Image (cartoon, rainbow, N blue to C red):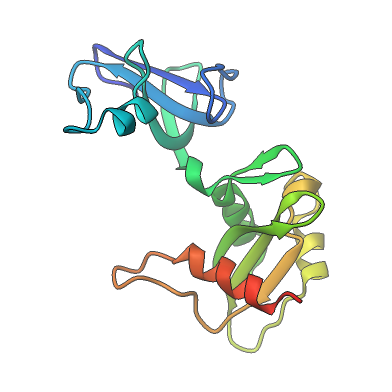
Length: 182
C-alpha cells in the first residue's frame, strides 16, 4: 500500500543508503512520526537500524512503484548473495510455484559455494506419483528467471521442517545440505 501521511519511504540497496530505481527491489527504509526512539538501553542495536538522519532500516525487501505503492517481497536477511548478485528467495519460490505444477511446497535458501560464496538451493515437496530433477526444474524455469537465479541444487523432501506455527525453518535446510556435502 501507500505510506501513511507524514511517513517517508525509500528503497535502497541492502546494507547501504544508495537508492534503487523505481520498481527495483531493495531494502525498505522509512522515517516519520511514530518511529521508535531506539531500543531501551541499547545504543548499539539502535545504531544498527536507525541512522543519524532518522531512517529506520526495516530489514524488509520490497519495491516502491511510480504510483507510490510499496510492495514487500521478502526479508533482507534471507537474501542469497551469489557472486555479487543479490537473489531474493521469495521470488525464486514464487516462480517455482507458478511454473512447476508437481510442486506442493518449496523453500529456497543460499548454501555454501566455494566459487560464488553462495548458490541457490530449492527444497520441494511434490504431489503424489510425481518426480522432479534439477535439470527438469532448470528447463521449466528457463526464460522465467535469470539463469543465475535458477537453483543449482534441488532436494525433494517428504516435508519441509517447520515451527509449530508452520513457518519453514530455513536454517535446518542449510544444515541438512551442509551435512550431506563431502
